[in-house]
Image (cartoon, rainbow, N blue to C red):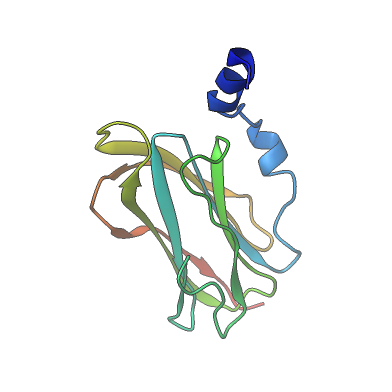
Length: 148
């Protein structure tokens, strides 16, 4: 393989515009939570719905309709966006957690992220945070979906 081709293969993937990643929105009457982060870490999104079942990479669908839409890992294009969605949002409390279990570059101990929660009939909730390596934060955002 020519050197130029080998270097091209080793080059980091191009950045994807965040607007392309979030082009779609939550279904009408649904809930969608997205975790947006960079290339330094593999963060994991956890959302616990009103039925007290958590959706995340190891439990990709809940009995109340929550589903993991996207799980991202080291080596994938950035920014990375993990998404969990309920097509029909049940009324009640939702808890959002973020975990930083794997470093993707060097010995980084902190990774910045943004959470975007889309709820029926409300403007999106946007929250910035910072995850600490090895520390699971089970409650970084909570919101309520009222009875309709």
